[in-house]
Length: 188
Image (cartoon, rainbow, N blue to C red; front, side, top):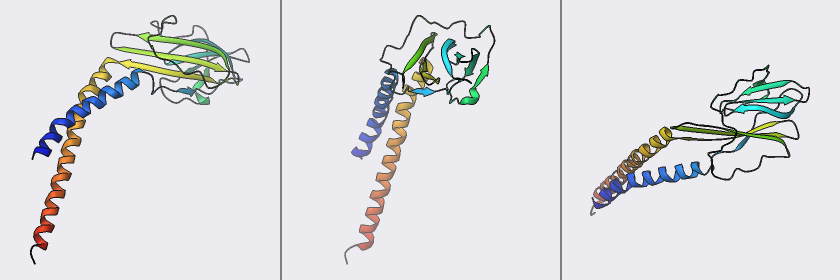
């Protein structure tokens, strides 16, 4: 009985601790990676403008192309010809980065780079774009959401308690089975 009580008291605390560790790792950018947006036709030579969800690149043929990736995987079909005015969020900030960690270098020789952030009270988004010598465009994305952090912090103890209850259930079932085997084999 004391083991069950200890498990049920400690499991929500362990869940909360896991939530805090997860949020700290995410805050350091450990879950952010450079990913390829492929390349516009003729390959990219420079970045024109961007926000965290869309990027405009000048191609070797002189045309400007747009890729709206919005945090999802983007391939060659992402790129479409673009004409001015190039539409990006009016809140895009090209001067200030809110990410304070170290961003790894792009995965190759860089021809051009651009970083942009959107910083709101409850949400911050940041994207760093790079054109590599092979004409591909890469993006590194980071986000911080107070709502998502709150959900993770609230879910941690609940998940911890659920795992604690499952552990207690397994222990009770194993103990009951052991007692039944002992009783059936009895003195004989």
